[in-house]
Amino acid sequence: MKSFRLDLVILDQTYGEGKDAGRHLDSGQVIGIISKMKVEKIIDESSLVYATHISHEGNSIHDVMEKVAINNGYHIAYDDLEINI
Image 1: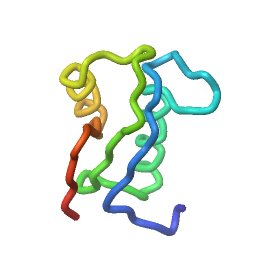
Image 2: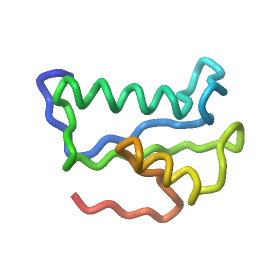
Image 3: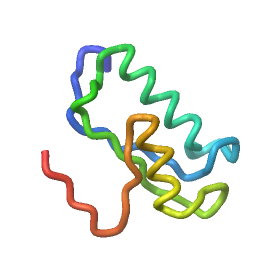
Image 4: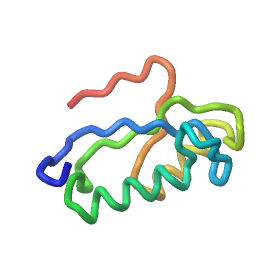
């Protein structure tokens, strides 16, 4: 992927941090992936990054999750979200 520059990234964030069950990402893993993609210049500050596939295991309400996500360079998707790229 290092040869790509992405405008939009959508990642699975099924679990809250530390709740990884092995087949889906938790919030800590999402933050790590985003950081690595920035270092490798796959994404930058203008890229739109969203987490989706949110479960109730270890996750808070949307508003709380969104604040944490924004502080880490991404957003939490929600039902009926429309993204213009």
